[in-house]
Image: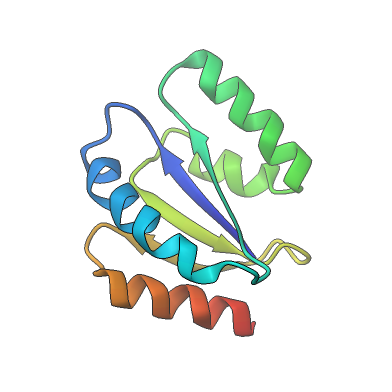
Length: 105
């Protein structure tokens, strides 16, 4: 599972969601989930993020979401299917449950 945070330095929702994710990510140590982010802050970070999306084979998903920020998509790493979307509205327990569910397929 890929946990891809759509982020920007100026994003208020990111400032709420990212600390929650930082707290819970460690609970998934040893499990097949890779947490990363694509940065929409400026032209350079967008270019870098597009290249990262290519590496992961999720360019189509990235292109659909380009310019949008403040959430994490849970993506099946092999099929590239979006399994869920996490937002600042969810508490840590709900975020953990959604990631656990995504790991089950």
